[in-house]
Image 1: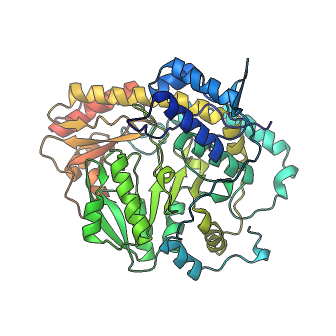
Image 2: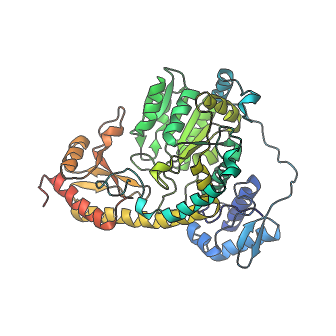
Image 3: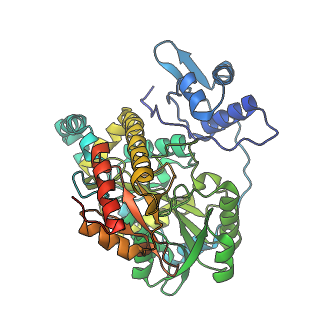
Amino acid sequence: MAKAISSFEFTLGSRPPQQTLTSWLYGELRLAILEGRLRPGTRLPASRDFANQHGVSRGTVVSVFERLQVEGYVASRVGSGTRVNRLEPGPSIQVKKLETPAYVRRASAEYKRPKPWMGLAATEGSRPFSASGPAIAEFPTELWAKLSARRARTLQSWLGNHDDGRGYRPLREAIAGYLGSSRGVRCSPDQVIVVSGVQQALDMLARFLLKPGEPVWMEDPGYFGASIAFGNMGAHAIPVPLDEQGLSVSAGLSMAPHAKGAYVTPAHQFPIGMTMPLERRMALLKWASNTGAFVIEDDYDSEYRFQGKPVPALQSLDRSSNVILVGSFNKVLFLSLRIGYVVLPASLVDLFSAFRYRTDFHNLSMDQLVLCDFIVDGHLGRHLRRMRDLYASRLAALIDGGRRHLKGLLEISNVRAGLCTAAFLKNGMTSGHAERAAAAHGIEALALDRYTLKAADPNGVLLGFAGFDEAAIGAGIRRLAAALSGRSHR
């Protein structure tokens, strides 16, 4: 059996209050296997690890694994753990045919399907608290070099590979398996398009889905890269305010009920940090389904959640083909990697591929092959576990240091996720004033009002912690305290 992705944290749906733990866990795992989110050969986590991750007893997990084994869904062997079996095709499941969303119908009219000839079927060492990226010094560079060398020795085997514009096929298979396992995403490899990162994804989607002047919901405050992409297209960004649950759907409905789409960061809102709860997610999906709007879900750092259970992607709840998922490996691994992905509804794949072909004939690179090996051989799962622990300790050091040295000056958010965190001023300073004062003391603390469209100044700053060890974090906090209190730093 071919190698398959293993060792990722597995995301489960919410348990209905009337359902027992055993039947819920069995149903979630069985459905994931039948839908292909847990692919043949995938190794399930050890029963103890699985139980700890989801807050259930080990006995419950063992019971469910045993039932799945008896029914032929998995096989357990000493030394190789419990792995998903390859299932024989059974009776097809009848799925209610859904009406094609309006935004897909419009894209179908705008972009012709491709012709056959197209071939388509932290920086470490920067100033604290720069939010530029991951801990580069902790990346397994020697392992990456070995994988690169192994691929280079077989250069001729892939130089002539047919490029359909979507990226290296085995990498797309690996990404689909990774997202299905870790994020609950429902997709086939054909729905995955490899891009250089989230910004390229947003730029292409804006040009593909929008016309000048058309309205699109934006979180306010939110990611400026999305507003740039929409602005470049001449679209009208609707600044929908946030509440404690993220983007306010009710506010969006009052401001622009017939917007063509929405851009959201539901797993870890950027830059404030809240997670959009299930009820709000369903309200957003209901609006999109009723109006035929698209929803771009930016899953920019969901791998790094340090507290609570993994949060499934919004896309996993979508039953009307309205959600387009974008994400990137650049901040997960290293910024110069330049590999991200777009997960499209099946009905958009050919149309988007034809659109992309107008500006980008080829989408294969050596890095795609190396990343594929890095995922499939299990290195990504191990790296994520190690970095999750490291970043959790660095964030804890930042929060603890803030409580000791920044009391009355700055309150650091207690959201335990991501590579950077919001912090809110308590000394009367504006966001811009705090940023300038910090810079004068050798600290990078980006003003939160940089990310607003029309919202009032959040009176806070964004602090990156991933690229700094605990000693650097401690020293940075003391400098920041001096800056915000108006003292000179010695």
